[in-house]
Picture (cartoon, rainbow, N blue to C red):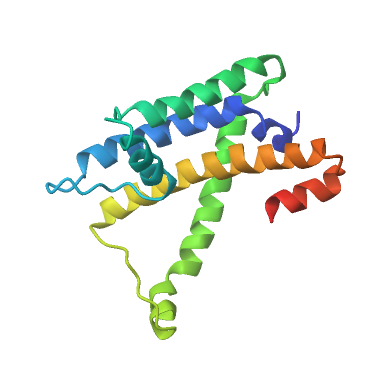
Length: 173
């Protein structure tokens, strides 16, 4: 199995994601402001606020749901799992580090550029708090938009008899 095929399987994604999710949840709990202000942002915050309209939300509900969905998907496709799990997970980490460092390098001057354009930067808190917030945004938004939204939309477009060549770009847009 090639690397690209291996990273499409949910098993290595689950193995890679669980420590990140645990670090985010532990950091969000530990570094929360005394005022109760949360470090959560993005889709995580939106889902928690939406669910709180229906009652108290157990802190572990959302991360356990993410893990359960990925674990169920991995179990469903267990026979097709990559043989070289460690190499695949290492590749995911290396790929993430390379892209992350590239984005970090590009963004070093982002505050100055945004201010010249008349836009305010709103990153607040300590560097530790920002890292935790950015980690959560990355994990949950990738899960919701890439794994659920994009995959389902591409599948729906293919069901609507669009060829994959057209369905995938349309789902991306």
